[in-house]
Image (cartoon, rainbow, N blue to C red):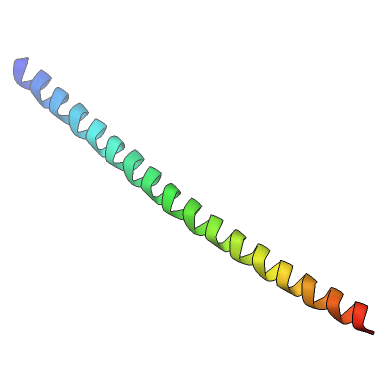
Length: 62
């Protein structure tokens, strides 16, 4: 009976370890993705401002 309990506890600890590693990897990937998304959004906002500025200048100069 003790052998079966030891095997069960070991299996449960291994499963818990796998779940913890999975959560850690997912969190790291999420942080990396969020940073990249923020950079893309800032870049798009800057391009939008430049585009808008050029078009307003063209309209005012006509």
